[in-house]
Image (cartoon, rainbow, N blue to C red; front, side):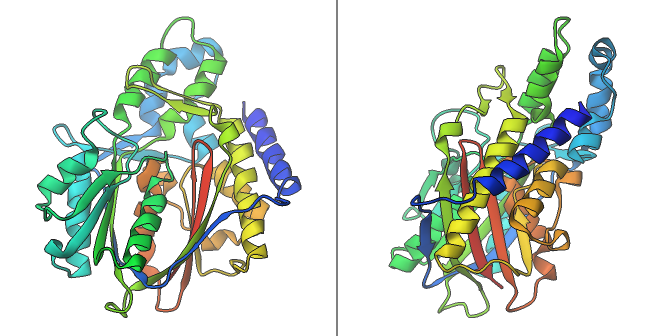
Amino acid sequence: MNEIVLSKTYEGIMSAQNAASPGSEANSDIRHRNAALLSIENELPPLVVSSDYFDEQLADTYKRLRMPKGLLERLAGISERRGWAQGQTFEDGAVAAAEKAISSAGIDRNRIGLMINASVTRDNFEPAVSVGVHDRLNLPRHALNFDITNACLGFVNAMTVAATMIDSGAIEYALVVAGEDPSPWHRTALRILNQPNTSRDDVLAQFATLTLGSGAAAAVIGRADEHPNGHRIVGSVSRAGTEHRDLCIGGEADQGMNTDAAGLLEHGLELVAQAWEQAHQDGWDWGSMTSYVTHQVSNAHTNAIIEAVGIERERIPLTFPRWGNVAAAALPMTLAEYAPTYAKGDRILCMGVGSGLNTALMEITW
């Protein structure tokens, strides 16, 4: 299995490099005039769920299929992830992160004109998750609130929408939140994999599910001219590869999530490489950023991005070994964790990818 994954990783890198010439196909290119990130905070769940736990739960299946223990840590590089305590919810996490972000920004919450929830996790189809967060934060009635769901890319998309509305003068401040809890999918994956007829292909299809972790993040965005110490949101490019929409399908909790991990790696990397090259043709210069904050997935994903676009490993902060893949909250949680290490003038590139496939690259000047 290790040889298969490594082979697919190499094929993905080569495919991305060979396909990185986008021809006449363009990125979406959005440049902001007056938007700044005022604060970014995360909320870590209290429980630690080790990868050893999943090994123990799947011991009989691994033995029957003659598969070694330790696959999650050895192949993905994830030793643990976080989980909410009994009675806690992903909404609790989003509210806690939001309270931190509002306090850190030092703003009056009554001046918030927009609140977007960007999480993958939701308990029901309606109402939107945003309404519960809006209510619990006691935000003003004039504050627009809605969800943006775009798999793991939702938070970056929401920041773009918020920054654009601030540029337009429609609002003074925006709040973006995401709280994630994949534990129902974990339970479904374990149920599927512990059936007597489970195959190696089933293990591969459920592998990505077991890399997921819980957590929450929140950001406050405001006018740069009113907050000279804020971090300028310079702009972003995005690119769609929606012909690959069937590579990762997450359904109801009892249906679980099925993922073609090798296909996601290969085609997701190809999409990022195409977006990167076209962005540089369009005038962006991201070759020597202070930090590249990527969506947190695995060792293979990180190594492939490094090879495909030629960035330095030490400039990529990593949280997936301890937190796993926290879906839409993964990138902002990582940005919040490393924000204290950045200095004024540092250039940060947020590199997001979401199942679908979609990618977005957002530049922030600290």
